[in-house]
Amino acid sequence: MNEQWTIIGERINPGFKSTKALFETKDIAGIQALAVRQAEAGARYLNVNAGMAGEKDHGFARDMVKAIQEAVPVPLSFDSASPELQRIYLTTYDADKAGGAKPMINSIAETRLDMLDMLAIRPCKVIVMASERLEDGAGRRNVKAQDVIDVARRMVAHTDRLGVPHDDLVIDVSVSAMAADSEGLTRMALDAIRTIGSDPDLAGVHITGGISNIGQQLPAKTTQGADLKHKLECAFLTIATPLGFDTILGTPWKEYHLLPEDDFVMEVFRDFITRSGLDALRQVRKLYKA
Image (cartoon, rainbow, N blue to C red; front, side, top):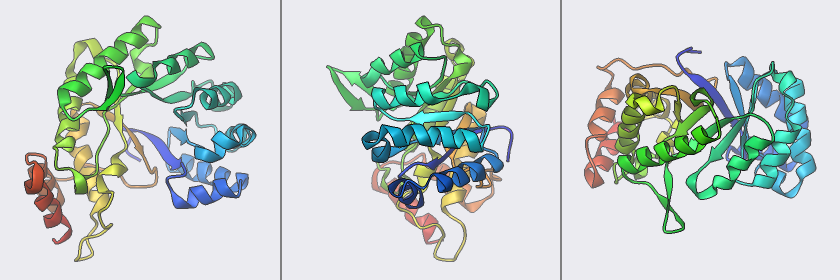
């Protein structure tokens, strides 16, 4: 696994059908095996999202955290918008079993600043959602890079006041599906990464996004059988990494790498991010028809 990125293993999440089945049957041994596979593949954190299974059964959520920590020494990232469930996760977590490493809260946003109260339970690393903002008392989706940047700055100011070091902050700029990206959201994310990564007031923060989102709704391979989804993830990384993107929420056993500039997917991806509307979507079609 390339050491230039911190990999947060994404697979303990009901968004994956096989994992959802483990939750439905409360297959603790299966969840442990999934944790081990991710850790052995190079994950430096494991994201834990018990979904509705954890919401409905807090005992299951506790048992799952304990079981994962029995199986692997990797620190955990707790993914829930529920303060109650986050409290259960954080009070169950045993730092000694993770070599003293802090857990991670995934995530805190302007629309749920009460989640900052969780830091009173124990010191944590924090993923900050910069893809949405609070406006007129309601959450709004960001579609402009400047809005993402402004939210990142405001959220870091909040955590600065609480004494959270920048090295414990990970800003999630949100990565969108190319197949439906007629608004230039991929370009927005890259523009935001560029500014956040070079802002001296944000020096030391980390930048992330769920790069598996890029290939959603697209076939895994082109009509000629060539790899597509994973190549698109690598194309995004090729541009984003030099700008400051250093943390991947993804599948650890994928071979993440930078692409050469003459790679066909890389060339089309660079063209795609300069376009909007139907013009951009035509480039996506060009990829899987290649």
